[in-house]
Length: 144
Image 1 (cartoon, rainbow, N blue to C red):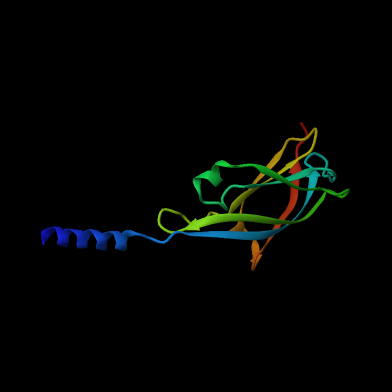
Image 2 (tube, rainbow, N blue to C red):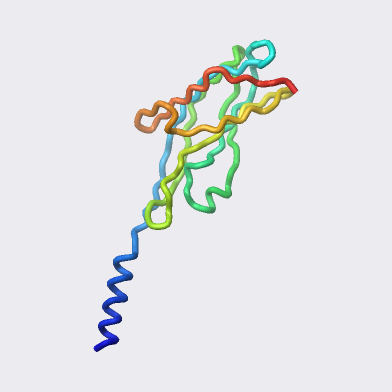
C-alpha cells in the first residue's frame, strides 16, 4: 500500500512539473534606412556593404552558436541604405527557455574605411505587425 502511495505521489509530481515545450517558426521583415557618410568630410559613401547578424532571435544553444553575417544590401550613389529584408528564425517556448531578446547587429563596411558595427534591439524601433522599421539616420565611417 505504501509503495502504491509513493508511486501516486511520484506520478503527481511528474505531471505537475512537466511543461509543454512549443517550437515556433517565425519571420520578421526589416525595412532598414539611413545614409552612410565619410566621418571626415560628410561626403556620402556609395558601394558600402550592409550585413545583418542575428544576436538574439533564436533561443536554443545550437542556434546561438551559429552566428553568421548575411549581406543584405549596398549603399547607392548618394550613400543611402534602403533595404527590405525578410528574416526567418525559430525559437522554443516552455520550461527552460527564455523569451528571445530580439537583438541584432548591422555591420557596414567599405574598402579603406573602418567597419561600423551597430548593436540594435527590435524594441527600439517602430513595429507594425511583422515589419520592423529600422531608421539608422546618418552613419559615419572613418577612413583607415
